[in-house]
Length: 327
Image: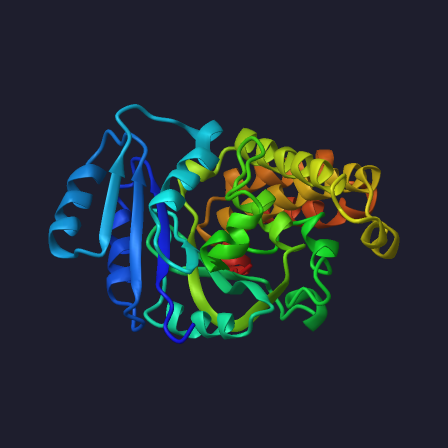
């Protein structure tokens, strides 16, 4: 795999505000061996026109249009449809509202020179609608054995209770993705259940470099959506734990019951994350709403954090406290 072809899978729906930046970030890649498979899920805005424009300029872009919207429940079908058309040895994920720095592929593709590596992930920045950096994930460098999934299955000690791997950060070996049956689905999720299964396929390669930007915007920011996604992630983890080999269950104490107990923490963290996003934009009222929801549902030992956040948003000098807030 000297210079493998990377197939970039991009799903988009009504993202005319962002899709241009997504495509331009791919066109500017310093690594030339790529193709981009774009699935448009029946967009009704200007997304289709923008896609046609870029397709005329770049032959490495291939676009598949859905006549009718398949929706969130069929995300895995859309991803696997793109996978069927992909020719690359390495698969990348880039959603239509996210974007990459110019050296993203160049920095990560070398991970697959090691035959033990089945997935590469990286440090990722999350941004506001305009692309301004608000914070990072992971916030600090993870432990080596967890980050590199050594031995295979080790990263599940984190993944079962929180998805620490943003989809925009990931490259996967096509051979191993195929061996697990392609992209997996659990209600609203595709990336998370897929990463769970990939964790048993081999080691991961973590690159501690900023090579992915995960855009956060208003369409992603409803309380109902956050709670539904958190519960869907717990459901995916509980289903998957039944397939984990017995020796891993014994070593790491994996169980559906333990995942269920952590579900409240997962939901609380989701609300706190969104509260912090609101703080970074000066949306005090919205931040208070999320802090209150985190306070209501969080375990007793977590309640101090949303309480402090909520109280601070009531302070007349809050703009001084949060003017340069970062996650």
